[in-house]
Length: 239
Image (cartoon, rainbow, N blue to C red; front, side, top):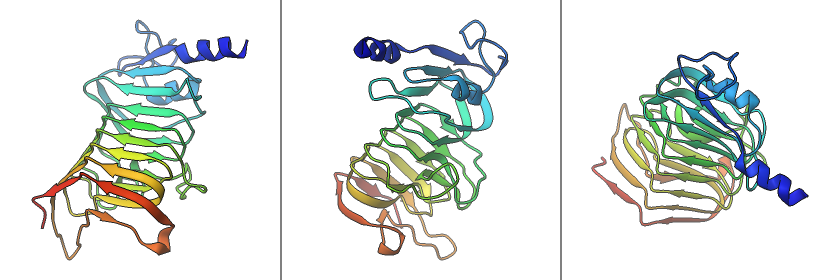
């Protein structure tokens, strides 16, 4: 039946990626792939990729969507480091990676272009100027239309990001418990409606060459913004 098929999809396959693997392997724990992109190329709804410790100097792009009860999940083991991740589809989870070394101007270390996405427990650090931390963009770098919905951005750490830190165009979404520090760019830029930002911590924002960082900013020329809730956030040691 359709319910049985959905249950099978929700269980999904578990694949493994290791710097010592090879993309001609089968992706098992004993025979892992070498690149995260190989996992993205193969995975279908309900599947999970466990990325083992090591540096993966790649931009990963999702190739297909997950499903409501069967998201596609990319999960980093401690020490797993990526350059950039482009979430181009719905029902994708990106969890527990370290992101460093993104050099794509006006792009983001994590780009969100789909709905029902979870970006959880990642660390983003040491980007170059005008490289954002987490941003809503399509695969070709445009602002999605309509804006993605039901996105969860939680428990991420952004430190030393020298583009705007979390820049989102989202409806009906939640951004909570993120830690943003040591930057001269805006902590949050927000567009969309019925989105909540709560329990985030912002520290050590500073002025550099005349730039003035804001904790939160929006403006009409870039899109619409209404019913945005900003509650129980803490900002300190900023000047």
